[in-house]
Image (cartoon, rainbow, N blue to C red; front, top):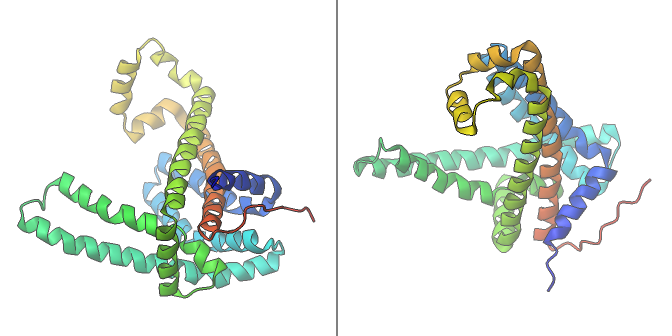
Length: 275
């Protein structure tokens, strides 16, 4: 049987091209990312952390809008705002419950490590964290999709999400693999754009080979980077970072929704008729 997984990418790109509303999470995340980077480079590190935390708390509103729009093609602002409010807690509560469970599990499993003498071993603790949070991330990727599209309660959302992931684990792995590739590609494009726009700031390093450049830049602190790129470079850095985020977030969210549909075995011959 021919795999339909590549069609998840095709449908994602089609939605990005034909549905303007799907860019709302990207606009929001891009603006926040640019602001956070600018605050960090201008000395407002504490405020940047607060802004990032608040933005993460607000983001489920946009996930609710995106999922409902993709499911129903609804584009009326009043209805989308209603859905954003209605879908917020069904998304956020399962995430809080799952994170709480993961943290408690990490604490409980760290106790035997301490008894065995590995309590201060960073490699053991890192392995423990990865062993807990990677499966949690894998098993929870459809939380927002299930909560909004299937209108489930907290524990029903978690149960359904686990069911979909384990029932079609290859789709979940496909999501992470493609997401990683796209993230690396877009990030490299952003880095290239950043380097071109600030090329004059790095002329003094042009005569160095790559090894020497790595040695120099690896020792740079935030203050060193501030002095190197200057105020204009700080703005450019914030804008490029925001632009990369603006591109990535809608793609990843829509692609995850398409993988969710694949996990449901939905027929893929989807048409986006213009109204």
